[in-house]
Length: 134
Ligand code: C2G
Image (cartoon, rainbow, N blue to C red; front, side, top):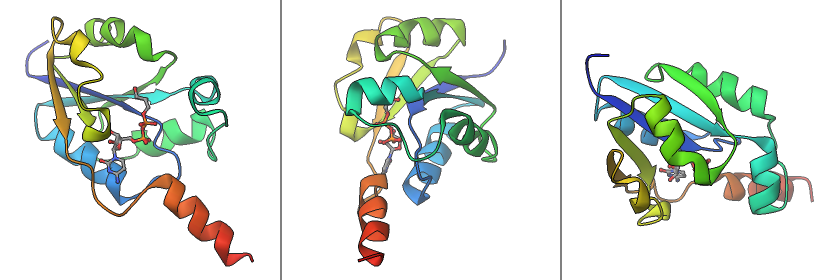
């Protein structure tokens, strides 16, 4: 396949502008953007609760973003190198909340951490909405 393939991963729950911006900046680093959307089961295992939106809903939303070419389910954090190889990725992009955490795949592709968009988070939005009801 010609061109540079970029891969990124995330839950993308309660999709917000920080998610759009990281996807747009990731896409700008190559010609094709592939996104691994983390499985509901992976969230339960790692965060102790399921996302607000289901895996299918989150995949549908991410797939609809203009700069995204392909989405797949990320079943395991430890399988990153396999996903990178499977999708022919030249560069892995993650937000800098993950800085250093995926350097172990740098034998398979370039690894780039982008600064997070400040002052917006899924947790903050959930807390804001919960507060409206009280
Ligand atoms: N992000 C960002 N700015 C924000 C919030 C999020 O740039 N204000 C980025 C994160 O750094 C990440 C992506 O958006 O690169 C998705 O964020 P999450 O949905 O929180 O993803 P997470 O649960 O951290 O990913 O392999 C990683 C796993 O899939 C988990």
